[in-house]
Amino acid sequence: MGSRVQKIMLQPINLIFRFLQTRQRVEVWLYAATDMRMRGFIVGFDEYMNVVLDDAVEVSLKRKTATPLGRILLKGDTISLLCSAPADDAAEGAAAG
Image (tube, rainbow, N blue to C red; front, side, top):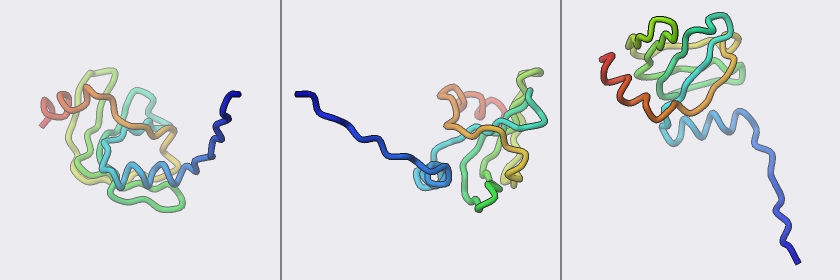
């Protein structure tokens, strides 16, 4: 007989907290600027999904540039998507810095 696996729903705030705890680099897609991404390490957030990123880098998809910004605050209403940053991000961040 096959075993049955039960899936547990993961709350969005718990995923953001996991990114903070593991100090995993994240990529943020912006609502109004679809040709731009922000990458960095989450060091804080609140219930409105306002996010503080450390070692933030502004990545322009159009110009193919990466501009280091340091520590920034992104308002939650400007965020469309938040995910772990791609593996090639480390080389991109080093080239920008």
